[in-house]
Image 1 (cartoon, rainbow, N blue to C red):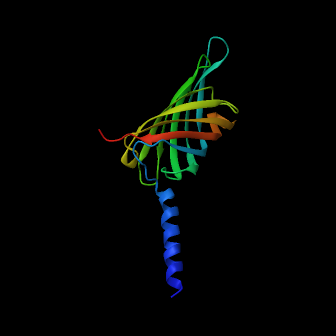
Image 2: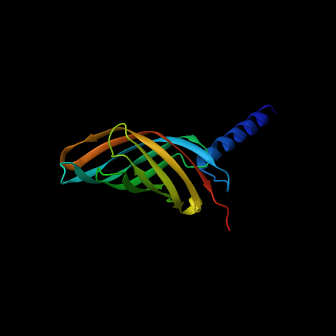
Length: 168
C-alpha cells in the first residue's frame, strides 16, 4: 500500500518537470529566459574605401535555454548578418525546435567580435510559437576566425523576454 503514494508522487513530479521541457506558452504573460548559443559558419569580407571591411556572416548552431519556462530547451539556429563598420550590423535569425516549430527574429548590434553586444526583436513564429513577440540580448564570448572565412563563435549573457499575443 505504501507504493501507491510514492508512485503517484513520482508521477506528479515527472509531469510537473516535464511541463517545463515541453514549452507550453501562456497567452499574454511576459516570460523571461536565458541561455547560450554556440555556432560555426562563414564570414566573407570585402574591403572598404577607408581600409576597413564590410562582412556578411552566416552561422548555424545550437541555442540551449538554461532558465525560464515555456520554450523548448534546445533549438537549432540559423543566422545571417551584414556589417560594414559604419553603424550597427543587421541580421535575421530563425530558431527551430525538435518539432519543427520556429521563432523568427531581427538582430541589430555591434560587429561580430568578442565582447560585443547585440540586441534582437522576436518578430513571430510558427506552430506553438505562432503570435510570439519579444526581445533578447547577447554578448559574443568569442569569435574565432579559421581558414577560408570559417568562424566559430559562442554567445553568452543570452537573455530576453517573450509573450504570446492573445488571438484576436
